[in-house]
Image 1: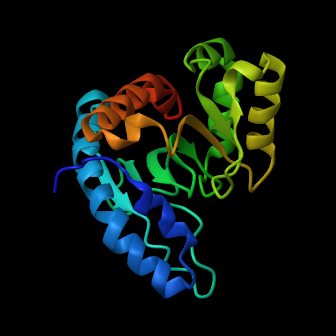
Image 2: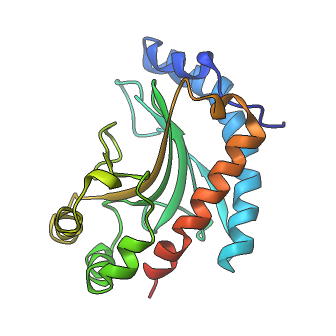
Length: 208
């Protein structure tokens, strides 16, 4: 299918009561859009990264009672899974869409990645535009706009990512559910391509 944008029904999915009922709506409303988005973006990322890139769509398989509060697609170089690698994400909560470069707590070498970012802090910080946002926990909506962070605050975030076992670091963009970009499929894809392209130097730095 073609991706024609997100709509109110997609965001309302997260108000559906019950695990089975919400998962049915996620599979029916959102995952086909994720597949359409991911098939395009994985090819785009392969072209600019120099690696084959694979699409993964969150299954929420570990859940037995509580329905998911968000859902996402992930793209990375490993066909078998994405959580143990730096990866790109597109997903949504009930009030916004997120576009991330994600370093989550399952990364086995996150300490080394954080140390590399800190040792090359000028290159790291200059790679992130002021209107981007940073999250320290992929399960929460909270994020900080880069323009509101000092270099010292950004370093503290990286130090926490380095030192705390469950700490995470996600950087990218948020689009509120009323943003007209979300209703224009091609425009959203282009904005997402540009976001991933902007974040590619950080992605590559993580593998050095």
